[in-house]
Image (cartoon, rainbow over all chains, first blue to last red; front, side, top):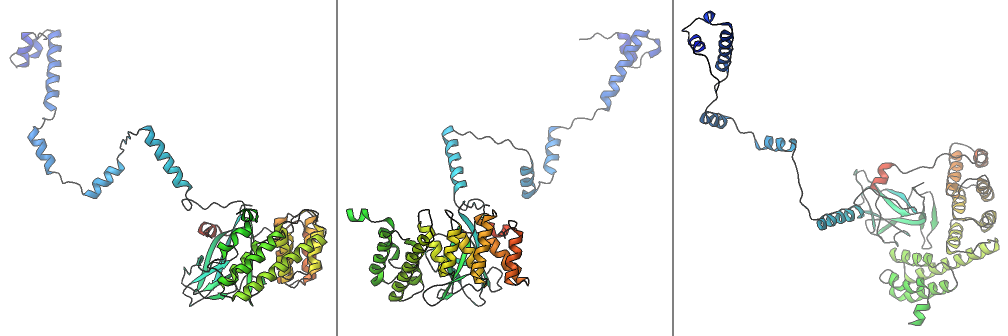
Length: 201
Length: 211
């Protein structure tokens, strides 16, 4: 504990003027007065009860706001995963990525794109059948997405020459009026001829 | 069992493919036509396709058999034409089918022979498709064949022969006579306008049909 000279005490208590102190004691008394002034200026710490009551009085944020705050706030996420499970998860992700339709369409070197279009207002369904799908009448459906009577389908087909016809409402076989290439089908009608070219050129 | 194993694969698999798709009573007849074609080294898939097509179109069994026989005859004629044209490479089913299709599309036999003889040892399908496209727009057969052979001689790759025909058709549609259209395209060879490509949206929308 630091010893304070009794004369300094007397000066701090106002019982003795500061000027009457020797220079060294006077400097010490002035320093102590400055410290006392600083302590007097510091805010008074609130009691625990006051602080709890103040917190309870604050309005609670809405669920949405708390959710947004939770999302926006950086969070440390830690997984404790056994190596065997990490391998299983990696394998599952790889299988998912390789599933057909799981990503952007990849064309093979011997594949191309064909777009079928048939204006058929009033039709309930339009399909295309041809040598590319063993002439299955219900295999490839065209869609009238814009409800303007124009039916369309974009299909990946093998490169080469194919014959086809449209099947309207499941029973009416119709030649493609816009094909530009036709061949006698030997059954009294004409098949349209489609030449599919490589798309990956 | 041994007989079955000795049969070509196409001949073995035909009945299951036709069952339920064509009238049952003609399946044995079609099967025998296909087996005979396989034994004769003719392509069999066009015969199967013709039968399936007839069944899908609800054509009577008799007419289906007739159409399959007609196609078999065309394939035989196509093979004979290839041999006559002096095709030095083995006569493959693909070549026979390409020639038969060209004949079906109205390309005269002599024109087909000229194209085959003009492209010795090369695939003919693309050249014959291009000539057939020109003939469909009433271009002269000999001049059409000559244009495609000129394109080949000037280094135009096979997969662009169709673009040669398309360029001539476009010239004609812009008002040139057919002769002038062929001459203009020939003068520009081997340069050609870029081929039409499917729109990116179309590509992303494309579906792969299951057979």
